Image (cartoon, rainbow, N blue to C red; front, side, top):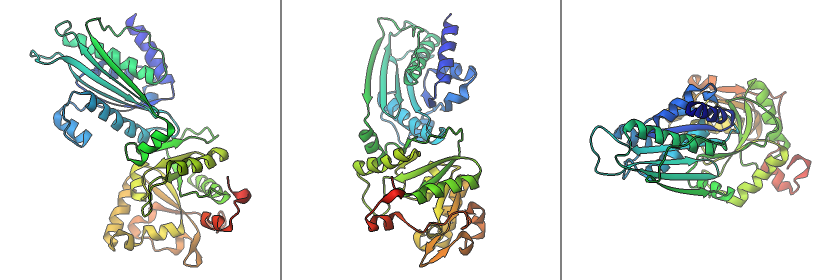
Amino acid sequence: MADACIRAVVESIHSSPTQAVLYLAGGASLALGWLTSVPGASNTVLESVVPYSRMSMIQLLAKIPDQYCSQQTADDLALLAYNRALRLSSPGSPVLGVGFTGSLATTRPKLGDHRFHLSTRTSDRCWASTVTLSKGLRSRDQEEKVSSYFLLKAIANACKVPSTFDSELTESDVVDECERFFTEDQELEQLINGQICFKIYPFSRDTLNEDRKIILSGAFNPLHDGHLKLLEVATSICGNGYPCFELSAINADKPPLAISQIKDRVMQFEKAGKTVIISNQPYFYKKAELFPGSAFVIGADTAVRLINPKYYDGSYDKMVETLTGCKRTGCTFIVAGRNVDGSFKVLEDLEIPEVLREMFVSIPAERFRMDVSSTEIRKSGGLGHNCF
């Protein structure tokens, strides 16, 4: 009966839209087996990592934790897993980061408590729990099962799926739980501070099942018809992919956008019914790491800056090395014609280094040409029918 109940819960988890990354150390290994043994696991599990050795944990956290088995470490793992899930998930899917660390019964007697710490992170919620097990009551196998039951229940809860099976905790076990919810403003503040890597607003009315993103980055102050048309044409050239806009809250040479500014610009995309991603990376080589395999839609003026050694400390080799790093992520650049130094230029007018040439794809001028910019629209003082 227990196996049937667990299977039913796992099937419900796999039927939910949530996609997850799990970082588990020191227990709850059965839960991973349950999740991956039921058909549909690829709908849910994006990645699972078991950082069992100390060096593995240090490399994953990029620091030496004060305690390897602690609520803080579980929280850190959950946040890392959440950010990893954002990178790996299908565009617009809700994501979940799971962190678990345990100190369960082993081959030798333990001086400290038998316990485990669990944390789950979604876009608007962080749930944390420390469970201290009654020492000497269970074998390692039994503690493993209890921690796995508890973890599966937490995942089901984060996926908004009911779980009816018993976790087999007793009155002598101590459970300490806490829950925090985040507002949109708090989430954007976390993004600006670098705690989370991006936030996606999936406003698109299209139902596309594409992992590859086709991204038009910009300030969008304001969003206008030229932006919409450019992304539409670029998507048709790519042949497949999930079209979306990207706005960085962090600027290379200006202060970060205020939360109110971000929300005002997001409203434009909501009205237009187009997906927008808010990130904290102003540079394309960092965007490439954030959105591997994506096609970035840029103007010829941006392409000129991308290949100009001036922006790489004057080093041609550093420019090639940086863009080669973008190439290794599977990213490409779809280039539209733009006015450059007073004349209209297309990709074919630019001197792209041979080693990078296959990264750049041209949008023919006959398919897209619009010389108006957001800056010019702002200066004209009238947003007109081109803006949202």
